[in-house]
Image 1 (cartoon, rainbow, N blue to C red):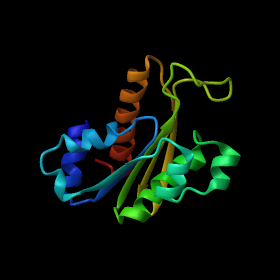
Image 2 (cartoon, one colour; image 1 turned 45 degrees about the vertical axis):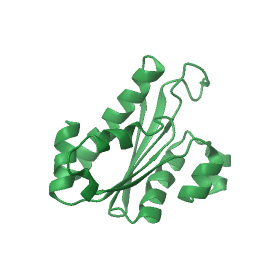
Image 3 (cartoon, rainbow, N blue to C red; image 1 turned 30 degrees about the horizontal axis):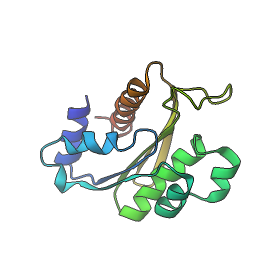
Image 4 (cartoon, helix red, strand yellow; image 1 turned 180 degrees about the vertical axis):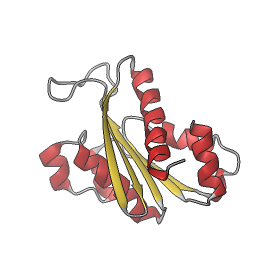
Length: 154
C-alpha cells in the first residue's frame, strides 16, 4: 500500500514534507525508499522537543501548553506548519507516545495523532496502537500512508 501511495505522489508530482516526533524520521525514511522520490520529497523534520516544534514548524506555544505535544491540535499544527515552511503540497505529521513508558490514563502508551495537510486542508487521525515501541512506530507509519491513500483517493 505504501509503495502504491508513493508511486502516485511521484507520478502526479505531489510535493511532500514530513514533521515527526514519535516516529523520529521513519516516515521520511520510508518515503526515501522509493525510487524517483527526489522529485517530490522536499524535506523532513524530526521535532521531538516542544521547542523544536515551535522553532522549526511554527507550532504555537499556547497549543503545546494547553493541549500537550500529543494532541490533535499539535498534530494539525505540525502538518500545516511543515507545508508552510517547506512549500510542499502535502504535509505529514506524527506525534505520540511510543512507550514503553510515558503514558497516562488520559494519554496511554500507543496513543498517536497523525496529521495530513493536503493543499491547505488538514485531517487528523487518532489511534492507539498496541505492541512494543518499534511496533507502535511502524504502525504509525502505515497509518499515515493509509490516511494519505484515503485523502487522495488512491
